[in-house]
Length: 403
Figure (cartoon, rainbow, N blue to C red):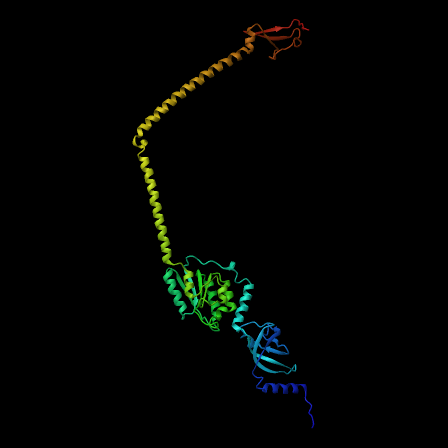
């Protein structure tokens, strides 16, 4: 028996044809734990290994299939993969080409939900301090939901009953399916661009997890969190929770509950106004009664009953005060005159003229400067002598100083 010589490429191609033709390997379901996971962000291809306690199998999931995954694969995750086993001819390595992947023991949507919730929570997207209060009396309310569902009818009915003066700005969108999430994001952006509404209600009626999934998409959650206008999330029934519920400023259990939370009840507000009006009326009546009593007291006073008596009494008091003022002024003037006379007498006794009257004289030179000593006189020099009744011009004949 002669053996033919094959090239490496021929061998790999032959093995590939065997694997490709094996119906047990195409398609095939393989369960295992992910390891060595690599996500090529540019190409979108996923490369990883599946392993159990005894063996390892190389695997690849191309971008066209990876884009349909609802969850994020990661090392250590147990998964169930559907695909085909074949050979990568260039490397001579057989591997599993994965078309679909599901978490083993947990649904893909549930896992994706928990993964996104944990991611956004760590970013602080759900923090309470980011939540904004709703306006007390909104003038315009934005509603983002399906135009054909019961949710929009319930919202409009309740808003019309509770707060009919509010204007509804409606933006119809898909609320499930592949095109729903982009429409929800665009509707929120449009509401914020026109900036004509005070609060936004976004939601839909109940359904399965798949039906509600558009409200669990990451772009929708980020659009809700970044909205400048407060958002009420109203998705499904009371037991349904979506990612949008956590990102919104307020979560309502149903669309009807959202409408009740968005506006006050006009009946209750009218009762409050009526109570305030009644309290104000009672206060005004009480205040008016007090003022009337004060007015009655004033009008019955003696001053208003006989005003001339008061004038006469004031005239008598004025006359009495005038007499007291005149007497006081006269007494003060007499004392001042006496004091002036006493001071004048004292001043007169100190006057130089008074001293001259007692026989004294004042000598001064020709310029009028007083001469205080004999040493200032010189024989033959003239000087003046002031007496009580006049002056005399004298001449010094001789002088004698007293030792």
